[in-house]
Image: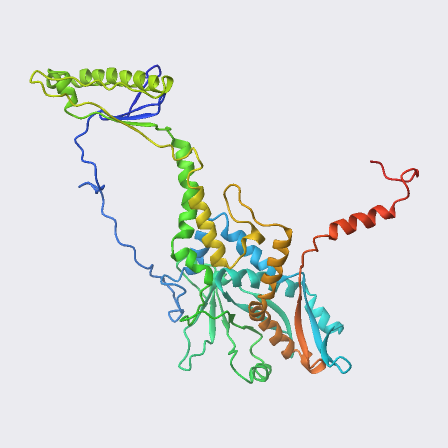
Amino acid sequence: MANRTEILFSEEVAYLPSVGAAVYTGSTARVGKRTPSSNTPAVAATSPQIFSLLNVQDVAYWGDNNMFPQDIIALAEKSTELPALLDWKARAAQGALVLPYERVYNAETKAWDEQPITDPDIMAFFLSENLKRYYREAYTDFYWFWNIFPDLIKNEEGDKIVYIGTHDASWCRWYKSDANGIINKMALASTWGNGIYDKNGPYGMELPVVNIYDWNLIENLQNNKAVKRFVYPVSYPSPGKAYYQLAPWDGIRTSGWLALASKIPVFKEAIMNNQMNIKYLVRIPTNYWPAVYPDWETYTQEEKTAKKRETLDLINKKLTGVENAGKSILNEVGYDVNGEKLPGWDIEVIEDKLKDGAYIEDSQEASAHLLRALGLDGTLVGQGPGRNLNAGGGSDKLIAFNMYVALLGPQRQVVDEPVYFACRYNGYYERHPFFFIKTIEAAPQALDTSRKVSTSVQQQWPAKDSSTAPAN
């Protein structure tokens, strides 16, 4: 077989690698919709997984199978774009630093001035590693799931909140609300992915949840000495959702665009790993063989295979000649003893779908839908995969970034809310009645900054003839 010009996959299908031709040497199978054979096992319809919730039968499922966050993570991990773009949004929202400020009325300008708060106690709270970690983790969960599960801890006396963090959103599930529509508990576990939850296990925990709509929440919480640690629930509203809000980018998943984008590289890899570079499709009718060889039905299987190999060699020579002689082909057709035309070969040229970068347009379209779903300007993060794509100039990026940051206010308010609550609880408003939190932006430099810096550095050096001048 190593010296032969063809690869005979079966008695009906062969491949000629030297010319890239797939040859059907005669099949009685009908071309049409593929249907399962009689011995093909039936595929059962999928149904939501039933979880063994032990002592938490009253947990509100997140998704039909209570695995929505885990399913989102698994799907996103197949994407080359979604995790990186969500990370970009989280980092942009965090800014460079979050600091306490207060508004002071300026009688001369008749306007409110913003002044940083330098109170050591308050600054220690805002510069703590715990708070920095809170913002980092909170924005990550926020943009992935649109829900945050803040973790707040009091000091021993119970008069101050000394810690703000987050529970991993994928580990969290709300208990169903009580008769008044209030959620009082949260179940925390790392084992949802295994379909189980054990509140007494090493990673199982039940935590009280405060009612953020209680107008007297701070006083009630201060008086409740038994509660040392609690969850302060926050999320960005989405229509029709009661327990778990839905991120606006989720449409890229339900529409199928995210799955399509992940299939494109898999399909391309499969083609590259198994490609035969088929250029021609040659069909030889079944009745061709007995018409050319009158004793065909008396041939043994080995003799029939030998005749088909001879024909394959002939096809290989003719198609090789096609490429070497201006793509002309001779398809000989004869006549039987009755004067009827013998069935000939049907040779079809197959367009090479890969030569011009197949599926690049599909990939670009999927990326465009993803950027739209995430509300991102392509000039900020690039227009996605493809060729000859212009992501815009420096001025476009600067303007786009400023516009993006200008619209972050409502989303930052969601993430800031537990911090504001802690500041009220800790009495910071009593010292600074017009207290507020300000995010210091990680603003890009102006376009001419590098030129100014370069000029100022050059001016620091002596003349070129000086012995202290830097070497070129």
